[in-house]
Image (cartoon, rainbow, N blue to C red; front, side):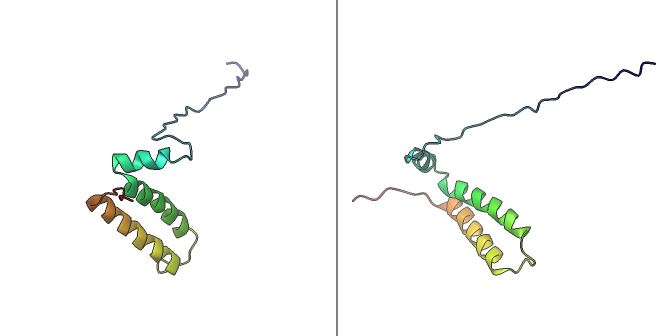
Length: 89
C-alpha cells in the first residue's frame, strides 16, 4: 500500500441562462410584457424576498412579512387572470 496522496481540483459546473435582455433600456420590461409573464416575474421575485424576510423576523405575524405575503398573493392572482396592455396616449 502506498502512502502517496494526490491533490485533486474539482471545478464546479455553472450554467448561465439568460431569459431576457439584461440592458436597462426597457428591453427586459418589454420582453416580459410581450410574453405576458411580468406579474409572474414580480411574484417570483417577491417570493424570494419573502423567504429572506421570514428568516429575519421573530414571528409569522410580523407586519412587514404579512405585507409581502399579501402582495405576493395579489401578484399571483394578477398573473393568473390579467394582462398588461399599453394605453393609447
